[in-house]
Image 1 (tube, rainbow, N blue to C red):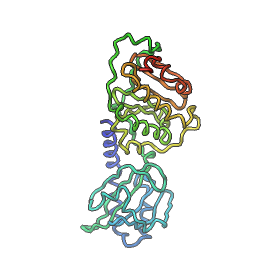
Image 2 (image 1 turned 180 degrees about the vertical axis):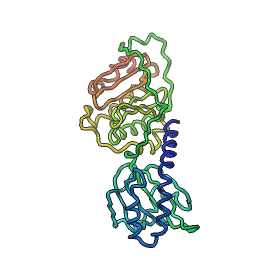
Image 3 (image 1 turned 30 degrees about the horizontal axis):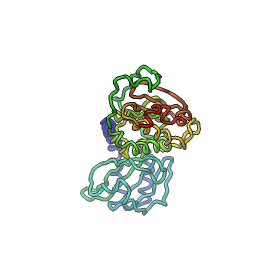
Image 4 (image 1 turned 90 degrees about the vertical axis):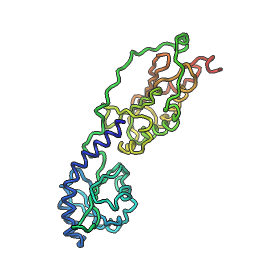
Amino acid sequence: MWIKQTIGEQRKVLTSLLEPPMLNLSKLCVSTWTDVNALDQLLNSQFTTVPHCHLIYVIDKMGKQISSNVRANQQIDMDFRGQDLSRRPYSVSLYPKRHFMLSSVYISNTTGRPCISAVQPIIDEQQFLGFLVADFDIAEIPVSMASSQTAPLVPKEIRTPSLTNQTTRLIQPRINSPLDQHIHEINEVLERLIKQYGIFHCTLHYSSAQVMLWHVYDPYQYRLFTIEQLFDSETIMNYPHSPYPPQAVLPQKNVRAVLDQFRTLRLADERIYLRSGSLNIMNGMVGLSFSTEGSQYLPVDVFLSKDLSFWFGQSVVNE
């Protein structure tokens, strides 16, 4: 799956970029291990040698922080000395590791943003002392998460025939897809991504069980996800937390209503059903493609005002 492959590729790039300076700095930490103030000054003077780092510190082998929090511009915060970091997401896999590692993505307690930590053991000859830890804001790491395998979809001809006039055509009955089976849970994930993580446009392809997402910080690229990928918490964490855009035409309260109406149009009938649905909160438009190959684009308020008889005819609703 391309998203996991891309994350793996990014981790390899980050490892090759960060491991050499982290290893060098860990060796320097040995000489100042017993002098906390000297350790702080060392981290401060060497801060810029670790590229794109926003926070660096040292912990002992039990997860207790020894040094201060050291940031850019010679910011040294001694209040964090002695704090217990043994329950941090990266700490559970530290001991007895003796080599460089990258944590999974987690939410930083200091910034509230998606973060990743690089961890380098500090070893004095054969004696294991602790770890050098550098934190990185995901949004500030200049490694694209976009997949080179993602290609634009070729648009089909757009038609807007009356759906009920198409029932004489040979229509393939709806077959439940993985998206259909988990449609409620997927709507919850999409609602969260739209309201809290900067997704402004989504397209759900129900038959192929794929979802396309566009982000406000990268509006010219889309990412294609399977159902399994959307259920992976690390997928969400790779999007920065973003407030709902104030310029969005669609009120935030109507996001879930649109997604639930998509679900209704998908599952209401076995012959005439939604093949794909798209929502753009910035212009307040929805796009609908049905099994009859009829496509329609209309404002959200019009879309939500229509009942099932509008789409399927009263005879279908009464069945």
